[in-house]
Length: 300
Length: 267
Image (tube, rainbow over all chains, first blue to last red; front, top):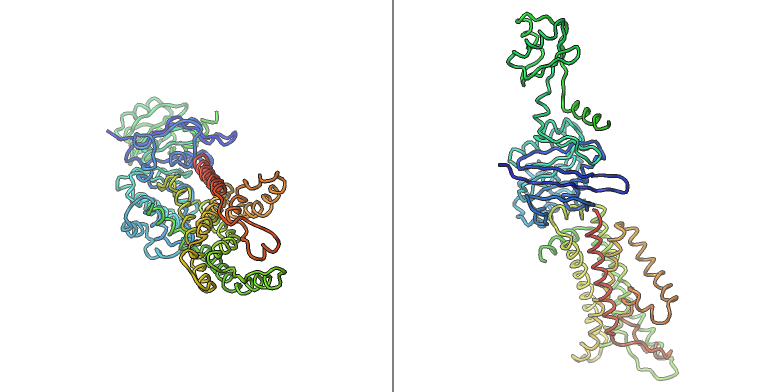
């Protein structure tokens, strides 16, 4: 049975007339790498701010680990909200010592987390001398202090160059292997697709989709086939063992393939079975299309 | 509590602004009392010499009057300590480290207590500094020191500690309210030097004594030097319980207000 890590119930936060979060509910379970995906201003940071107890909601509630939130809970969570926030005049080590003092953990862990994020060489430099990528990595190191059960990352690759982005992503995947629950806010679909197991798509403070990323990606390879006899094509395709399902839509047959198969394989199969077709085309349905579709649907 | 002090020390002791302001404070206090002592003393002594009535030659730095004299004069420099406090608290806002501290697992109460502990420690150090200066100057200027003379007027030391602490708590409140160093410093200066004086002038009779910073200033009244006596002025030579109560009352109210600000305001 899976354990509830965070559950948000009917949460609302308004800034004047703007509904930053609007009656939002969300369940996050242990071991999830949960992506909160949405355009800028869709309420991602506000939600994280509320569950981290730095923003007061106007209504609704949330529970950490199945209980009413307490200060002690926050010591089980490692979090960065928006930008990395440290004392600029202090070195990385001194900054992490303050975090360790707050969490009540030993300084011994500091060496370990600095090694993990690759900042050992610069550990005694002042925070203000760090590049943006180094600041992000230090923030992840800080969040990892005290072996948290949950890691909250808010736009962890924001403002980084491609190399920095790749580094941070690898780091997150590395951390994820340790079995931590990770909650990550992002406006980058690609990022969520590459890192997350679950996703909630947000628009104007509401969820318009929640579910597993794999579920969305399963329907990723869709092939459009057309020809003189649609029924014949469809029935032939249905018998194919690497086709998930197929159906006729308008003037084409839409077939979704199982993972690892492409349009060429389907074409070969149809030729072998003597089915005449006039065209075959790949209609990739990535998370991005899905996301755009969802946003478009919710506009109606 | 040790944990909170440890955290505060890390934040404060590695900060250059702290050391600059602290050094400035120590420098001004010591140079005023040591370097300028001859000047002030001569003025006071001279005033006695040319007086129509006989006045005993008396130094500002005689036990036990020294405690009253020193604490009164040093009180003018508390503005520097106020600036120090404002820098600390507004830094926590501008670096967004207040928010990060809370996210990391510090409670709002702990955060406020840690700031109050800092203020208490700064007050203690400043009071101790004044005490040391008092001991040195007192022994240099008093011909025969008895225990009673040394400890006479000692309550002024305690009042000085309260004066600094209460003033810094007020500065901390302004820091919390404005979140910005420039605003808080401007507001503190404006309020301290202009607004309260104007209110004091406008308010009927003694009401002004109940204004927060006026009450703080009232703790230690102007010392009655021989010079003052010449003009027939007579100031209070003791600490009034009422002043202590008013100042403590304000401080507790301000602490509660700060707690409410932390509690209610989004970070």
